[in-house]
Image (cartoon, rainbow, N blue to C red):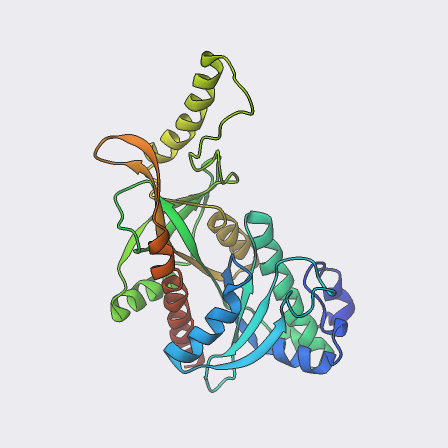
Length: 309
């Protein structure tokens, strides 16, 4: 069913419409063939990953749809968008989009980019009813509650929220990501993860009060923080981060295949001692931050090839 630009405009609030730019025709054309979304947290990563796609896979950058550094007057949010040609006969492209930190940013990016792609096709006079975003992949970093080596890539097999409600990635896309990890020789670990709403409390980072408080109150604060993590460990959860659950649940709602991959850069639980720790390897982030995106890009290419057969 054709819906037109007026319909889709109602679902685009945070990312600028093509009409916000000097040449809306060019911007709409840039988004019209996007069928794959690569989501990242940092607003610096889309440009870095567009360069990586060129260097590692020989893909051609279509261009920058929006970058807050260039057009801060159009948007004060962190949703930077780069578009890369996947080099396929069908002309499918991939948008690399930053979502910031947390679940709401991830939801906004998925739903607004989907609407923008439909809007752009309608604006160009194309049949937007035939448009469908095929896959969403999230590339990021994560902590581990198990014995996973720093610098490994954690591939989520299931994602929970703080209430231990579950959301699942697409099984076929996940298998493709796993196959790409093996083919590229990237160290990986499979396991379920928790997308906690809280960076500090939810991941066991106990913060001190402003002043002195009674010892029994401080002990209770510590106990609550530890109990939260114990629930995760006892549930067999291996990874901790903040967005995977939202990505999988939103994509399931929209009928889009999804996968989530993250470089392991922190440890929250010492398996041998059976106690919680706060350990962070900054060098692992520098060394492995872009590895998850490589796996997702490779999986997207294989998915698109299979789709066109």
